[in-house]
Length: 102
Image (tube, rainbow, N blue to C red; front, side, top):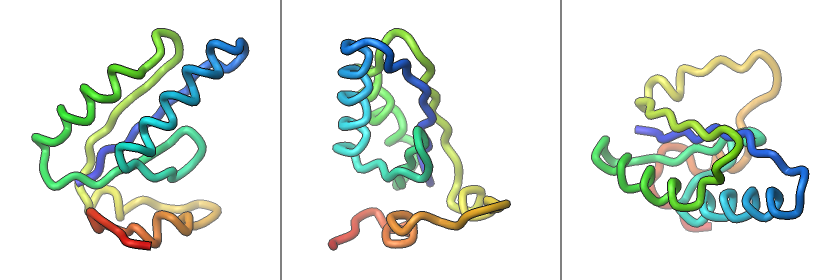
């Protein structure tokens, strides 16, 4: 299963830039991998883990802007269609593994 995080945060003021950096850093700390700018994804063993990550992200989510979470199965995630471009190298390396040692 995959947890996808989509976000669009303002970055006009110094404070907004700081909130953006804190949020993005937390995503990476929690094991999310960037698929595209402002789109991060993480594998989860089961649906019950969703609330754990949702709660941790809520703590650092800025009040303004847009942050969305989507939960999809491995099959749904792998059935994506690329109209242009290809999978990012990080995504290829991680695949559907819960832990990758580089």
